[in-house]
Image (cartoon, rainbow, N blue to C red; front, side, top):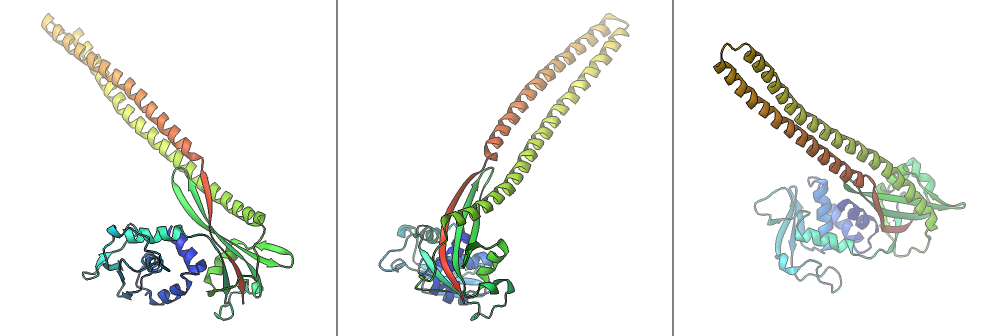
Length: 336
């Protein structure tokens, strides 16, 4: 989710684009990638003014009365957040309270971004100005197009989300959807927000839907194969467990039955009534044990079968994927 929102804010959000350029310069390499993403998200979404980065730590002061934009109050519950210094990164004794993804302030920043309305943005890719040398993208200099970001959520044996980018270019023959390799190149180009996006239009919905459908189908197949392998693996584990339990009881039963056979032979060799009577009692006790083990073996077979059947049905229900796609960002672009 953080990766999804990072892409959304970093490329398409006009309210934070300017601030991200400043924030990015102050983020040091000694902050981990996740820490950097979280710091940039919180600073921008919560409109943090007072922050500093040093020694692998980003410290920031969060107050209660600073607005997030205009006269809007902060999006978190005031009772849960105490004004003061917070930090993201490695532990420091005087850093204040540590911020993490589960912290109220971080959750608030994420919710704030998720609730923002989806608006069409305009972006200029500064290929020449940025001094880029990417041969594959040079044919698109002077071209215009559109960029869409979708979140695909797959719910099955597990729930996972994928961020999907679709980049389209407009030429004399209409619209063309760029392949995956070219699409991955676009975020590497220096970009700037544009006030006026009237230079380009959006492609017909069918073109984007078709591209998204193909990507979704490929992901479904990949996840489906992985889920089927997991399904077989789990049932194999149950089979192995069942075999071990039943084998242990079967071995115990065979051992007792062998003892019964030996006792019967000993009884036949007995020289007097006392020896025969003693052997007969021992035989009866062992036969009772055999009967109990036989009953337990039957109960275990039934229990293990029911358990395996129940688990198989549960897994089968989740083999089918539920897919939900959400457009989280869209922009028109030009490359210069």
